[in-house]
Amino acid sequence: MGAGHYFAERPDVVSARRTVTLALPDETLTLQTDRGVFGAGRVDPGTRYLLLEAPHPPDRGHLLDLGSGYGPVALTMARRAPHAVVWAVDVNERARILCAENARANGIDNVRSVAPDDVPTDVAFATIWSNPPIRIGKVVLHELLVRWLGRLEPGAIAHLVGQRHLGADSLTAWLSAHGFPTVRRGSRQAYRLLDVTCDSSTAPA
Image 1 (tube, rainbow, N blue to C red):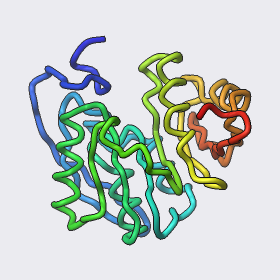
Image 2: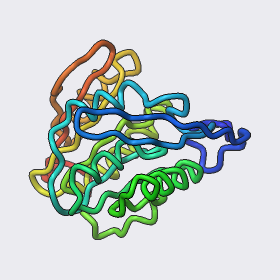
Image 3: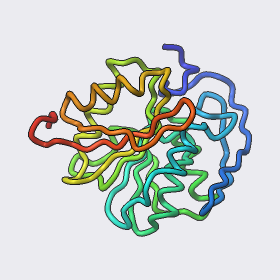
């Protein structure tokens, strides 16, 4: 895996920051992006679809943006749920720095931009929103999702978006077969929006 990939811990591509605007019906955010970070050129269409169609996040508790990048999902969740704590989790150090800076620049103070191992083990999530890093490979992706979906609060729902041609439909079946009942909330062009729950009787601890 080359260090220039967005899922590298420290991308070695030369920094070249730019500004993008995320305009939604209820929020507008101005965000700094950079090379070596997912969606650097624009807000990814799958991310935008998630933000347009996912239900309003819980007003309180701990919320998770898994694979947060420079923060479009985490910051939107934080604006919509200002009394919640939003954990923006990414392995990419450059992405975490951008996310934290973007939160400050947009006047958002309830986002914690952290590496995966920096989330306290006793934190459970009232929801998870994610445009997961499909390109890390199926085995690693499955391990990643099992790790975090297993931390949903009882009755909580995660909302994931993925592209059909990158395996969103097969992921739906795999999750359902491995203790995470999954249904398709919606479909738009090549994208699937999935609702995922945790069946505590079968999902790994």
